[in-house]
Length: 97
Image (tube, rainbow, N blue to C red):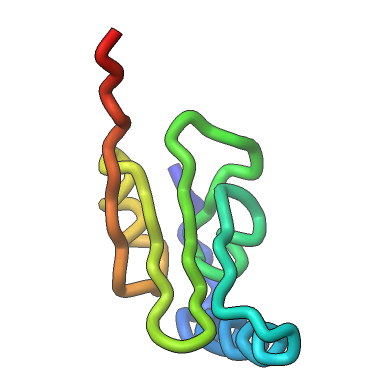
């Protein structure tokens, strides 16, 4: 399903450090990314470029470890393809209708 030719994992922390330098300049505590190219650039997960019914989120704090949020159906893929250690999953909210 995914292309196995990947960017080396050591590249991603370097990308995060460059972003953190910009966050310090702008006095930001963190950046929250949703499904798309920016998420793929910082996580290594080949995220779809369009909105999906089960979106992915990536929290990049100025300090501390990043957190990858994935729907439970895609958690194994997120763990496999992302360099991020803290991968958390969620399930849809069930409506009471």
